[in-house]
Picture (tube, rainbow, N blue to C red):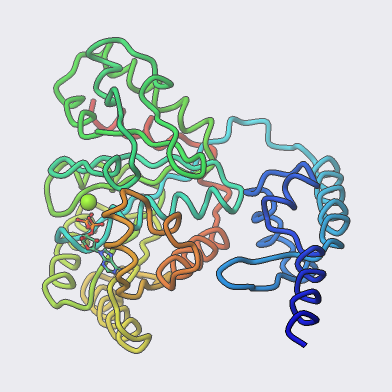
Amino acid sequence: MFRKSKTRQKIIMNHLLTIADLSEQTNLEESRIRFYESEYIAEFPKKILHGDIYFFHKQAVNLLKEIHNRHCKNDLKKPKKNIKKKFARVIAVTSGKGGVGKTNLALNLAIEFQRLGKMTIVMDADLGMANIHLLSGIQPLYSIKDIVDTEHSISDVIVEGPEGIGIIPGCSGVVALADSTKYERKQMLNALESVEASADIIIVDTGAGMNANVRDFLRTADEIIFVITPDITSLADAYGLLKAICNEGLDKPVYSVINMVHTLRQSADTAQRFSGSTKHFLNCEVTNIGYLLKDQTVTAATSHRKPYTVFDPNARVSKNTQNIALTLLKQEDPKIKFSSAFSRYIKMLK
Ligand SMILES: Nc1ncnc2c1ncn2[C@@H]1O[C@H](COP(=O)(O)OP(=O)(O)O)[C@@H](O)[C@H]1O
Ligand SMILES: [Mg+2]
């Protein structure tokens, strides 16, 4: 009896493929397969969860090839009416107070976007605590300041991170731009523009608080995510920061992500309290795009110097992050992509 069921299990397992097998047999990158999963959700091959791993039936190979062919044909058929240069969506991740989970969200959101087929770069622009490299286990040789100081190119500065994301370490150097010469600004502008032209999404981890550096990055970005925890001081400080940028004129989507929640109810209450007061007192609409449960996986991943979505892609907090990425992709605004955010930033400094 025992032997029979083991044999049967073996036969079944022989017919199952991991995403890596599927990638090998279809010649499609894993990130492309995940992109098709989000785009063609209804007809995407069924997955079977066994232990901690998802498997696919062998038929998935042909199904996926069929989806890929159709996708490529549709792409060719689309009229290429916009020959203007496309720029990345620049999304700033910010907060009123520190320690609320910005850096973790910025890095892991970048990984989820990349898995969904979007070329993503994360910029570490936290002046006080530049630590994306620590969370992702990379050792950067240069920071963005080296473009001006030692004439390195942007490709020397960008480091490849987990899942193929790009990481620009130590962007706090950009602050020095305010005091730099016209020639230096031009160098930096060219570098940042080329990054914007080559990526789909750039996520900026701005650091916390009310200082001018954070506000400049918020003015630059196309969209802003406020990370808030249910803690009352986090709400109050986020409100203070939003008020300051509203006073300077705010013309872009603002989102909230509620972090370290224990229940869905707690997340909904916190989001409602924030958007209720910003709407009432600042006349500013804040859209909640998701939440992250308080999950020990985050600290465990940090001690392994891995992003939590890589350390445990099936953890609840990883699934929460994936949902935020999917929600943001649905909110894409095509207008944004034809002007360079960093170009606007450098002009603003003049
Ligand atoms: N969802 C979460 N569950 C548990 N711990 C978290 C979560 N998000 C962040 N943390 C922890 O909170 C601390 C601050 O996170 P970090 O991303 O560095 O915040 P910030 O960049 O806002 O200062 C870290 O110790 C991190 O491990
Ligand atoms: Mg941080």
